[in-house]
Amino acid sequence: MARGQLLVSGILALCTTLCHAADDIKTLRVPDGPGPAAPVVGGSFVSYSIEFANFHDFVGNASHPNDLTLRLVQNLANVAGSYPRIRIGGSTANRATYVPDQEQAILLNFTTPGADQPTSLTWGPSWLRGFDVLPSKVKYTLGLPFNSGAAGEENTLASAKAAYGGLQDKLYAFQIGNEFDAIWAKQWLERSEAVMDMLSSSFNRGRDPIFQTGVFVPPGSITSDTSWTPQAAIENGVTSQGTVNSFSIHQYFGAACYATPTLASSILNHTWLETNMKFHEVTSNFMTLHGIKYIIGETNSIACQGLAGVSDVFGSALWAVDYALYAASLNVSSLHFHMGTGYRYSAWQPRLNGTTLPGPRPLYYGHLVAAEALAGGNKQVKILASEPSFSAYGIYTNGDAQKLRHIVLVDLREHLSSATARPTTRIRKGQVITAKRLSAPGVDARTDIEWAGQRVSDEGNVEGEVVLETVKGGDVELAAGEVVMLSFTPRCKSGHTRS
Image (cartoon, rainbow, N blue to C red; front, side, top):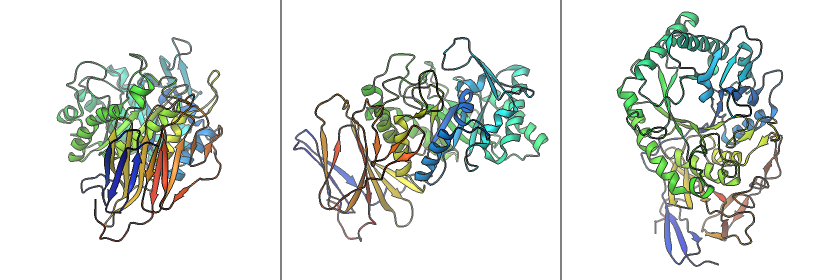
């Protein structure tokens, strides 16, 4: 057994030792609360974004629903206590044309057969029946096309009118355009005002905020121009008309269409995560000061629809836990993991796609863990450890009597399924706790994944009995490439001291 120690101490009189294969001693301090400035996270923090062209694949319609999606969304709601919010958008939202007399729900036009995305698409009124499939408590953000000229505006207005009439109170927000990496404030204000005028005349709707603005990537991600920032958007007046309810930014951690990312460099790398999240820390604080909800509205591991062997293996589940809890410690209102039919980074494959069968992907397990850690909402997250291959988070219930509910430990070491030996971290503690474990044979595994002894079947059913590891005065082991969530009984009476 290794001899290095990581000591954990705090007002709860925790005494937790993590033994690493190094002769060093590190201290992980667990405070009695997350701090006065810690944001409060809602139960729908872990949410989704679905490519516009593929929404019909994911949900079907009321007469022929996609039961897999129904079950997987319900599973998440069961552990989180509320349903995820769903954004329908992406690149194909800007290529979409509403055709009011089209009988088919959606028609996709591909220039390159087998491509991930169509070159253009048309949709008709029956496409809107897909919004009747999931439970009525699910709220949607819908992308509208943002093309120039009179024809472009006409398509935006026709799409918005049809969608608003079909969704009504299911609609949380409209987005106008997707990832326009240029200063578009004047054009956006003109187009959004045209939509507001249409909603007023057609539905007698007032000017309550209905737009989610932004919808671009961090500056410098697409071009070398770094002048177009969320701060610049606000300064250019995008919220000046009082019709914006939230601001969305997109985030990926590499791109398969450029230099090829790797599992170790892009996903199992907490330092890289932390580097990327500094932008969101600054920007979310800025938006909060301006009274605007800040959302990471489209995100996943690797851009360009993901990368096989990186986005679709167990390592992505570990990353999702690390990412979600880190984001929850910031002023981020929700995190929307993007999906599309056949996309390597999708949390589930909605239907047969070539030879790829429908079913959940490893990433989905990470969403279950993060959603359970934040279950019920009203949670605050404190980063307790931030190392290249290890992170730890304290999850607290907000209120006068703040309570530590969980500590989530994430080991990002790249243990492969073929390895013969697996390094282990031993956690020694001094309080009665229960532990739940997210595990797989290795970070490269696509199957044999378990969360507390349970698995999710190809049909989306949670199977097996929950395995709770109750430990009294003993040790809990955390293997390389695992997550362990420690849950605590109500905190001890005051009077304990920090070491």
